[in-house]
Length: 500
Image: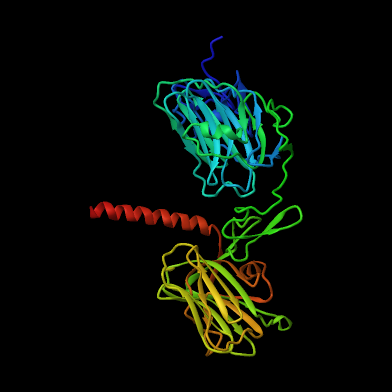
């Protein structure tokens, strides 16, 4: 039988390019997993993305749309307890096509996930490099590396999905979560001649030095791998391994120790009995590993302010204070934050002066300014500032720049008395609470004052919060910042081209 076309979900007239709905109604609903003669046609069309004509051997027409469905629970999960652990499976079948899917989660930024060598120089490898996926293969014309372009790093202790396809002889695709890459090769080699064992999670120690130079890994993967699908089989990494390991066990065990990269964005890893938690208070981020965007408010040009008033029975005297927030602005002079006392002249004020960030505090002696004068912050990009006070001594850090310290000489008071209110986005005028002095314009996110998340309380309509003026809740702050950076790069390139 000669098959010229396959119609899925309805009939399609190839000459007039219109859907034929008069003789038979089209299917309405969702469909997945269609396989015909071993070919996963829905997967092929999805992996081609907009390049539907990338295959010389077939032409695709698409009038349906793809929807993101929940990936479901991981199956056949296994924990690789050490960077020196691995298992071996029978050779990967990838001579003329490849269909490879699996999920993983880890807190480690580097490690070899998969490797299968072959005859001549042929091989295929998947590795984690600085938190991103590298898929490298060689069909005989030299190694090719495909990388995900996700904005996030994959070592965030969350499940991530990898899908690798070869829908045509020279077309290769890599999908990592929502990131999709496609490459079309020009070489003459058409077949991937693999041999031997498919290594999962690493290789034996002496083998790393013999791996192709295009593979970066010098240690294995530590974390969980699940839902491995090799096209025609879904093997268990423990039950079906031809090379088993006592350090690879069924199920996904969470990380039981604080590792160097367990918490993102300078979050503090706190060890517990059989797990850990990340403290994100001084990061301006949130979430289980300090990766998630925090609550953010935008302060407009027409002045606005958010104020938190401490209950009378909660106006604490503090010997230590820890404050952090993220912000975006173009203003060169503004007050981001002011904290006042109800009984004394004690105060702390975070401000921008001539484009530089400062914290000025007075706990009963004199005004003590501490700032970062080497970097301007009114550049419309996202900055994080952290301030800590211990008695009269204090530190301030902007982003990843050097920590600035202040150790005042002479006798100093050590206590901030009866903390009464926190003003965000400016400060009230001394002449009355109706006027805002030195108003801030821009976005403030993730504000934490001694573990008190002020902006979260504002979202929750806490009775101690008041919002006045031009202030609104915003989302996608980090996405906006990425777009601004891209625009700045484009503007710089255009300027350079015009100059030269």
